[in-house]
Amino acid sequence: MKLTVIGCGYLGATHAACMAELGHDVLGMDADLDKVHILNSGRAPFFEPGLDDLLAEHTASGRLTFTGSYAEAAQFGDLHFVGVGTPQRAGENAYDLSHLFSAVRRLAPHLHRPAVVAVKSTVPVGTAPRVAEIIEEAAPAGGKVQVAWNPEFLRESFAIEDTLRPDRLVLGFDAERSWGEVLLRQCFETIIEAGTPTIVTDWATAELAKASANSFLATKISFINAMAEVCEVAGADVGELAEILGHDVRIGRSGMRPGLGFGGGCLPKDLRGFLARAGELGADRAVTFLREVDAINGRRRDRVVDLAREQLGGELVGRRIAVWGAAFKPNTDDIRDSPALAVAQRLHDLGAAVTVTDPKALDHARKVHPELGYADDPVAAAEGADLLLHLTEWPQFGHVDPEQLARRVADAAVIDGRGTLDLDAWREAGWSVRVLGRV
Ligand code: UGA
Image (tube, rainbow, N blue to C red; front, side, top):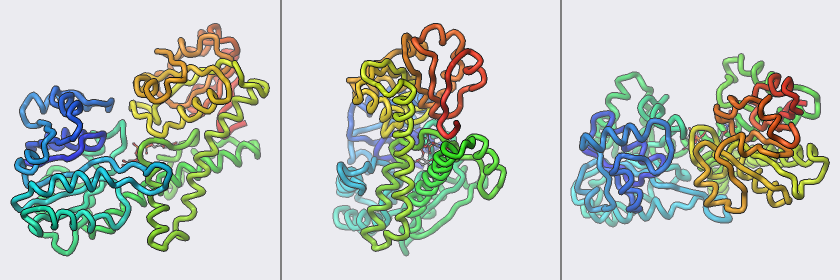
């Protein structure tokens, strides 16, 4: 098939490369011409494991190209995926849908023949009819362009695997679904034939699928982090508690790791966007609990700052603190709403001299937080430190020898915000160790 992907950020670039991997001819379109240039050279403008290889392979084979032109995209194929960003509006909980509407407005006037516009961006429920309206008004092909809703559930750092082998496909249509469904089923044929559950539904359910999935995932994380708060005062161990709970298949272990909580470009803003939209719809009572989910998440960051202050005898001014981690989670260079950087920033604001390290996210962190100190590796970051904070659980950090590191720091004290360090080894090496959710 010949298809396009409008918007080539984390979601769109991955989707484009994976569609080429499935055998389609793909044209990626992005308004940012620098990004288009990088992608056409077979590289990703961000770090995602395996994506560079996939882009290199398929740009070289000619199956995958990128453009900055909407006209070219409209001409290229009849199936257009839209994966532009829908960030949180500044100073509000609601989504900023301006990029989505602008992309659709700019694509529509070039749609001269019947086509399917399949939106993947995360949106508040009720957005699909607005997209359809814009297209109906602005596209020369008018009502012959169908709007489909195809929410994306990929996780950064597993993006390729999640796209090629998703745990489900959701296809949302209005009453007129026939051609759109045929085209999307054809596009995802390999995935569907592999036995992937495929749910065909209406627009609103497809939109809600994403909002509710992310809300549930956030709730699971905040549930175990709420238990961590209780463990801290009750003298219990949240790591062992999570394991005990996880053996119950109805609860499950995955997505319930206690620690510094969730960040990134999705869970936090999707929670807030859902709250805002439910309020508009008059269903706010149904999701009020999500406010608490958000609040619990924020308190984990406060807790690390409090523990750091306590560890340093109540005085942060001028104290040297090493922070391991800048990305919002391991195996990405994404620092959007990174819990690690939020803590680093707060400690800096309170007067500490903070040095951050991260295997992939330092360039982004330097740009957004030029006031923080940076070091290229975990040992250099910890040199002379009064306190070490382990805030993003990159596997490399677990390989640092605590015994050798103890000789490089001013004070061998560590707070493990993710609970993944080998605590016995660190204690044996003479470190004083604090872990969130454990005494
Ligand atoms: C999340 C969802 O998991 C995807 O299904 C969804 O498609 C995506 O948002 C999106 O909306 O686009 P992602 O933000 O890439 O994916 O990351 P997750 O792996 O879900 O992690 C989110 C945050 O929660 C990270 O900060 C992570 O450290 C934290 N987390 C995750 C925990 O604290 N504990 C856990 O058990 C799991």
